[in-house]
Length: 573
Image 1: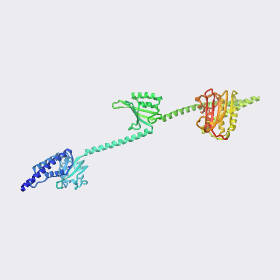
Image 2: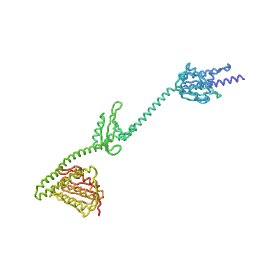
Image 3: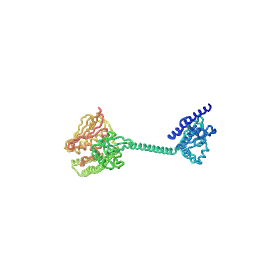
């Protein structure tokens, strides 16, 4: 009975071992296919322990010889262990090396020196584990580290897993050590990191350059543009990354001023059919930025595809409106300077003539005066001398007044005055200047009293200039001087009233296109008429200093003219 029980128990044990052996084979196959470095279940750990027991346990009792089938399974496992590509080794629970497979021998550089080193060094005392791995550890240990052992010629990076394997009773049977060389992977990873860093640095540099470019383009009112000829479109942008704005060739041409549109269309047509650089300036009625007109400098070069075919143009667009305006002002100022120089030269030449004419008369008639005995003749000579002295004084006054205008604004000193009385006094003085019997001098004073606060001397200076010019250009008819208290003719919307003085003549008249020029310095419409060309310019300065206005109206040559002055003032009483 005992024998039967023993046989029955052995039979059960054999069946269990067969099942366990098959599980071990399946586990090893799974390990080879997936190249895993760890056993995943407690059942596998138990099977490993049994396998280790079958392969290495010393049998002392011949009656307890292991079953042949179990031995064969252990050998199969041993062959799988030897042939797997994964580097594996086994250690006893106290850290002594039991066995290594060829892959591990290759990884760890096992030779005579290596064998001696690993057999004599405890696993727990190796330099790469002694500080990190705990002997009482029950869970799997996973580590990636630099394996540097120059004494046996090892310098590499490995990824390793150490798993304790337990028997059925939960005792630690052995340690399974699996590893793989990751030196090349690490090198590849580091190289990839380095390339990523270089790429990030390059992107950062590009973004920086783009930001700087955007700032420069925006602050200098410039745009980058490029065309796509086959699509007939133009892109404008202040950043190389952002396209900004797109318009068709037709929209582009329609935004150019009509005076330059045909020229621009011709230039665009030549651009599409040529390979030459572009450099032109156009006046735009509007742009994609706003509806304001402006001048833009457009420059660019053609660009080509990989086959060398031209696909479009690219370049910059710059707002040069301020530059064009400055150039235009420079031209005007240059022309004005040239005219001023010419006028000053003419002025100096005229001054020689204007000053010498009255001087010659004064000197000549003064010499003749002492030889004339007839009282009427002497009186006439004295009158001529006085007239020429007065003319010379007025010339000198105009020159001095013009010089004062260059130094600074003329001074104005208003005072209380009855202008009705002052006007009559002015007209009596001016009446003597009209000596042509064919010209009648008329003074219109409709006020008995006109009390106000003005600079009478400056007003008399302006009226004197008006009448003097009228006398020069009027050969017949009349010269009429008058004043009113009314609003300014040039300020119809202004209700403010002031003193309006006019001088009307039936003289030569002034062409409409030259009426604005007569108030400029050194301007004379007739070079054969005496004068410096400064009187009306001085009068205009006086009007401006009084916060007033000045002007002339004429229907043109042969229709006479009316010069007027208006200054704001209050009529008192």
